[in-house]
Figure 1 (cartoon, rainbow, N blue to C red):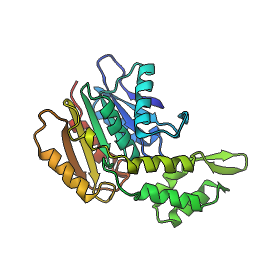
Figure 2 (cartoon, rainbow, N blue to C red):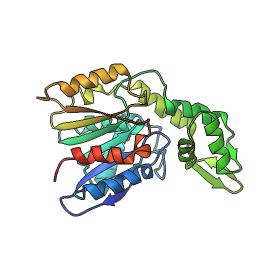
Figure 3 (tube, rainbow, N blue to C red):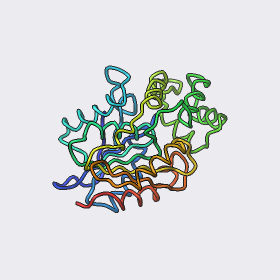
Length: 271
């Protein structure tokens, strides 16, 4: 894992680690991080590239959710950073929960952005994207060719343009930087791994916020009901769970960064 920093680094400044979703990279959260540290200058943000994504080394193996959470600990030890809070979107949200399980002995705030602690059959936009890119050619004459192919599969221009940032220009063609066999393995790991224990009971001293996007089906109605019950339950001897509903799609942080920033800025602990 590698990460870039945004915001203050002075002693006593609290640090939030941001984890992208599948096919993403840390810079996907740059706009949110910049807005957030403007509103909360007592916090700094680290934008991670997890293994197999962005500029991160692939690592010795594909990696389980727990292994990717362990990557955070390895990175933190090398950088001298122990995050006070960790945020993850989609696939990264489940990595954040896996990290919370590994950090049960200390206080930690965890943000789960349109992700789910449940295990279920593969589905949703990330899974659909995998099928689309595998039906497209392996190389493209231009970035726009890839964008058009993804749009033809039913995705918006904005999502297709975002996905095209994973293309690299190689001599006379554009090729994917991503290994889609690895992406499929990571997605199976996401869908097959339940992480309810991070929330129920979770660890005393942990504060967990789950953001449900209204136009996304990533979190099932059954999971929403369970999260709502945890939100309403006393937090004695377990993690405190908060469920937030906001209007938007799965990539709500890209569509409505102000909404996401306002929510996070309101609930981040004060220094």
